Image (cartoon, rainbow, N blue to C red; front, side, top):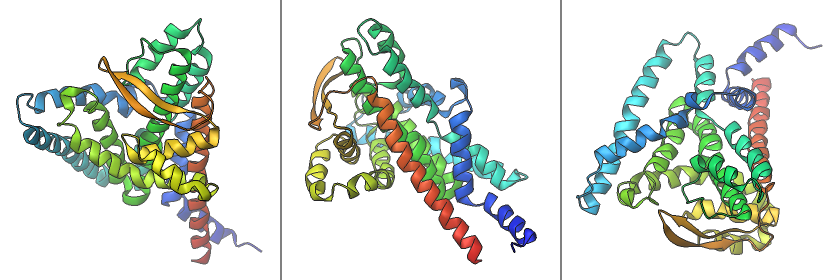
Length: 320
């Protein structure tokens, strides 16, 4: 017969574990409709202005790179110090961690974007689809066809889910709230000082390098289940993916298009300049449903890892 007292003790212990906090935050974020101005991504314009003030347009590439490194510290150090102070003052550290992580992750806006794209990516509503996608895309949208819109949004949804949902979750699992903040702030700095903008070509290099480094373990975890069923073609898929400007992200996109039988990549305009990116996949052109399909696959994999972490945690508690 199960000891009720022991069961309650185990339940109390489970609530404060990392796995429980991760799942709790992910569940709450999926159902709570946070206003856009309360999301952390709302600070992107502030970071962009900071970048324009800190970097010297007349400086050498080395000086601009150094300025970019200093800017990362200017953003990160005060935030980390303030977070440490607030957490020490919290009455309940697990509750503080849960609420903080809830503010760090953003997947609901991506699902809303994918849903809107499936409804608007038609010839009749294409101008409206272009307008609603502008905040999410760095490329120029004025010349995009319905298929081009679906392709751009599919790529953006995959990229942003890694950086603003899976990344902070892994960061918290590895290093607590400080890790979650690091995994969330670095992508925001990379977006704000994006090297696709010639102004930040050298200034944004440090943020871009750190961003790719932090993305690597996240993408390896998300891509592993997709790769297991494609071991015979793993080397080919890996080589194809590394042709992408962001190689590790290219590997994940290659695995996704292979599973979904899609074709992504190709030419696009950034700052009125045509750039020819490699084509990934040999399937059909994306449709309005493609962004939602890619999101569902990635989040299903993410939830699989979360459930595995919870099972391991329960097993450890039962043995203890």
